Amino acid sequence: MGCESSLDPRVARLIDANLDRAREGLRVVEDWCRFGLERDDLVICLKDWRQRLGKLHQERYKQARSTLTDPGAGLEHPAQLDRHSPRQVVETNCGRVQEALRVLEEYGRSLDPLLASEAAAIRYGLYDLEVTCLKATGGNNRRNQLQDCLLCMITKPCPDLIDRVTAALRSGVAMVQHRCKSGSDLARLSEARTLAALCKDHSALFIINDRIDLALAVDADGVHLGQDDLPTEVARGLIGPDRLLGRSTHSLDQVVQANREDCDYMGLGPVNNTAVKPERPAIGAALVGEALAIAQKPVFAIGGITQTNLSQLTATGCRRVAVIGAIMGSDNPEKASQNLLSSLLRPTP
Image (cartoon, rainbow, N blue to C red):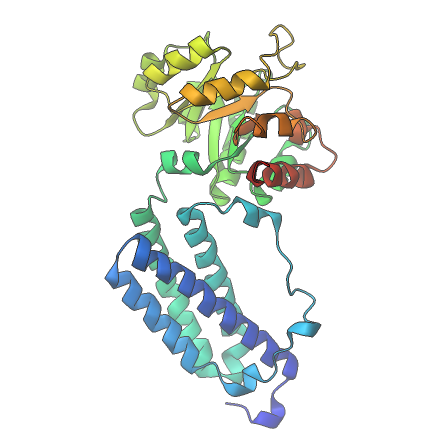
């Protein structure tokens, strides 16, 4: 271990910050395992890791701390707004700890070999514990993910589609529906494969519009069908019990019917007049509120929804929307996604 005089204060601050970050993240996961899952085996392991890191949190690292001069202090990313379920909190904090431990490995290797070694051992152990914890929490259950989802981004063909979807996912969008009515099947398949991989990387749901064959081909999380598409029982037989099945609805009667069927969620609209479905009259925000009162499954309002008119929906209690133009047509899809999520999470006055 290097002598005190050779310790670069910048490295000491970095080590101190990442030890704090790792220990705090472990405590967040530990408390969920203790109070949420009642898993003593996971609690014991997490507590041991915290204490091992605590013993290595030397005074010389703490003395280098300076939050007043830290340019990153207090900064938050809008994707944090979409952490509103235990699964998302656990997943985020496990990632936070793993990143911090990696930093400790790299900078501690020559300065503090014991710290670097412990950080590596804990990081690899956490990879396995995270999987166990998420399974116990329901982290691999598509329907649990659906319950957590507030904002669905529906795609439309454009040259920079992948960049736009990537920006939305980074901003916290938890569900992408691929809607493509043109082009060859080979082109659609290639595009769907790319989007499916992107969604998987960001732990987001990937839904294919209309095409059950494409959904199965790219192992999508589900398929969304319109009123004139295959009946629910036929579609369910094709996609199996585990994938999600969404159904478009345009009236209260159709919402009641969807309640009875084996679908997982509904799209309801168009709330406003829209160029995508010009032949359909707008149903208005008030009807969405009525539908929410009788719906037994998640309802995503859809149709001409923008940041400007979203408050009309949230005033009815609506907290789930699906949008096309609000993100796909935005000059800044990342910022547009962030603003929509912020509004959906904002308490109703």
